[in-house]
Length: 463
Ligand code: SF4
Ligand code: SF4
Image (cartoon, rainbow, N blue to C red; front, side, top):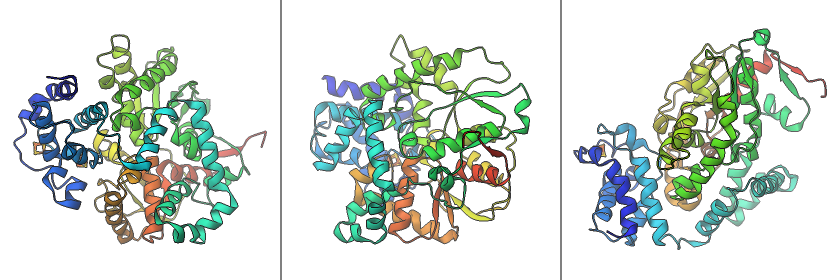
């Protein structure tokens, strides 16, 4: 067996028991968005696993366009995993299949957009200073009056539908609610510090927010809200320096080597925080508010299982990671002021299917007094964002997004909450494209707004 097939075969070997347990039941098919869109068995989980096995067994050439095309078209949403009674770990198989294709060079084509995306993943995301510069330019564009005018007037749409969509993705990263805490924070009018009556209690829970790259670069308002909300809920935020991108986009695109490098850097950065002498009753927790990042952070143990220096440390790191909603929902969530809002929620795939955090976001949402929660049909179905899928596979992505937004409209909610930057941007752009009258907000920002209204925050001395 040559090197290329052996890479994939290793992944299949690890899962072979489960794969052999696959009874071809087809229960994963209705859960698969790409199969639902095109009705082709090769674009279903069962079909893709069959193709991977065919490559691993040398029955199908890894360079076959059939193989790369059907693997490319997979969203990596992992809805097939929650549907599968045999416990097939499809997400890992997909990463290894993509790694195999990358190594063999059949992904070298794909047009200008894919070339630029690959370039950014390899030469920008792993380097914090380059990332900072890129996000600074993006924020400048997003907040410039000229760009806002061109966007709102529909001028960009008249020139190019694709450019308008890309701009929509960016514009939706701005704080959505001008009358709430987020708008004021963005304008720098008010700096706040949490006013927590419990803060005199010694027993504060040590948490460190994993700030992420896209979240810190474009959604700093959500990161800041997360820190404030945690402090109100009796936590002590500890800043951890030298964090880097989590590597999720790299892993999902099959660049596992870069993902491993980034994982090692993050493990190094957080080690001191994790090994500090915390009260055993309040263990140190790494909080993440981006579902895609959270799913990979929780899988660092798997990613580095063959690295003798990091394998154990990676498992320990992952054990301490919790999504912000998951963490808040394990205790009693402090109640803020009433927000009279009709709110619906879309569950990010990597929160619901990959992390299996299924009910915590609703618990957070319904803890806010006055919120009228309107369940979204197919809440756990992918929105079509899937990292950079909306840019690399725009047609399939648009079809999936259109179905999602129609369901959002049917709820009549004016606020749509989510908990992942990719979904946030996709849903915001979709709301504009398919004319849904609703704001997209990170779930923690809504809780933060309720706390501010309740007067839990006070102006800091230097504001
Ligand atoms: S990850 Fe999502 S798109 Fe890919 S096969 Fe599974 S359900 Fe289908
Ligand atoms: S749900 Fe699982 S067992 Fe059934 S066909 Fe899909 S992969 Fe095979």
